[in-house]
Amino acid sequence: MAVDLLRNNPELRPFVLSNVTLTGTRIGAGAYGSVEEVAISGAICAAKKIHDIFQDRSEIPEAEIRKASTQFVKECQLMSTLRHPHIVQFLGVCFFPGSRLPSLVMERLLTSLHDLLDPEIDPPPPPDAPKPFFPLCLKCSILHNVASGLAYLHERTPPIIHRDLSARNVLLLQQWWPR
Image 1 (cartoon, rainbow, N blue to C red):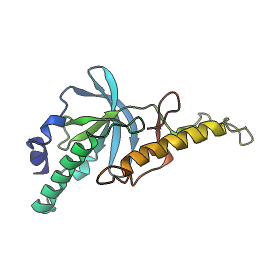
Image 2: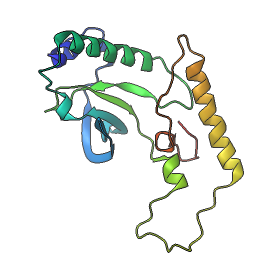
Image 3: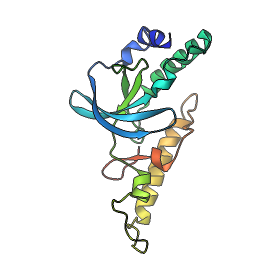
Image 4: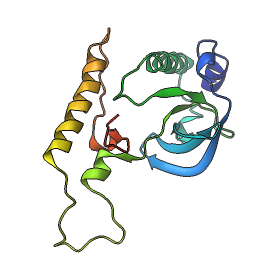
């Protein structure tokens, strides 16, 4: 039901990408879904995929399904308008084979602030090993740029609240430029 509402929604159609393929690399996973690496015409990107368990919820009233579908389309419309050097770029949505719900497709960044602060080294270093050097000027630069991205969201009409800001959700470009 929700799938048909989304697949056939004319307001969602401008955001649907048809040339997206899974690379087989899982970037991360959480309670509601996973983030998968995808390729769009050869360019590596990321797709936020909702867990399949949420696909077939026959006990959910039709009105709630319609409301959730409408909210998803509104979120896509909003994300498509965000343009800021410290906001991850929304590229569109896609429907993967075997999955009835759309996935959000975004630019792919290679690391997070969490990885910079607490790198997972295999094998782990000895307990007395010095931590990697993280200079104050780099900390201030990242903090300033994250604040700039948040200010951009908060200054919109209506304001946008991130609601899930954490070191894992501050993604970094190669030059430690946050998004």
